[in-house]
Image (cartoon, rainbow, N blue to C red; front, side, top):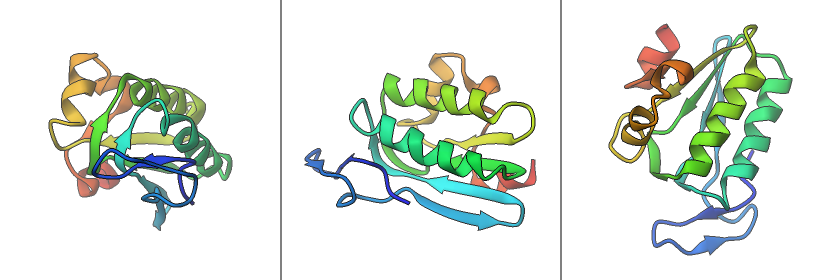
Length: 127
């Protein structure tokens, strides 16, 4: 599964399917979605569709691993919040945010508790 558009590390736009992929993997009963690069107003809608497609399969847990994300814009924060609400109470939802590009915006906006943020994938999967 890939996002509908991404930005490469130099900031150049990539058309759908040609940029870095949001990897989706299974870890037991969990699904891990791991985007890379920048999550901005261009990328967020496609990534949200990818995450909601995973949610439609009704996994017991979904983890959004932002370890390879280099920039998290307000559109990315809004997308994460919308996906959290889409998961409802039936699907455990967690976010891995381990660096200043991802953890800081989440902390500054007060979304850490709502998004269930963890410093590593291992911690998120064990929660």
